[in-house]
Amino acid sequence: GMDLDLDHLPLKVEELVPLTKDIWESYARVASDEIWTIETVNILLKQILYYYEAGIIKDSAQALLILDQYQQVIDIIQAEAELGAKIVDPPGDSTPGESFNLYYNEVSMGDNSILFSMGDKKMAFVTSSIKIFMNNVDQVFCDQMEQYHTNFKRKSTLLSKTSEKDRLKLFSDIMSTIDQYKKKIR
Image (cartoon, rainbow, N blue to C red; front, side, top):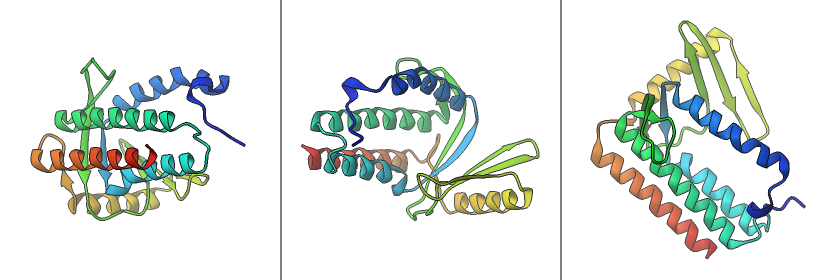
């Protein structure tokens, strides 16, 4: 079977570690608007718990370590939302990258779509499951997706640089949820 052991990662995974830093830095250099729902956070938590309960993550200490690291990422995202900009090289360095507008909506979107635009060119990325990923450069499709995202943003709360009370509540709720998952694993 495919077991996960963080202390003995396959060489192929080890080789990807520097690439993840490059991806983070590239992401920090692209302005973005993100719309989060409670599922944004819960999907990964459910996956971690599933892999632990299925025995793929064999050791509770490793599952808890992954959840600790997830909390560290959430801390960085909270700092970025407060700043209204991405952080190029966290933690420790707070060099601001491009703008980061985090929106929150209590209603689940039901998708994980991405719309990328540069000037008048647009590209949509749609994921329907972990294994199916589609990109689309058809401008009519991209325009419709842009309208969908714009409408959803209008119905959401902007948490970047504003709405401190809502932002603090969301991130406090996220941390509590992660702590609840830790209790299920302990």
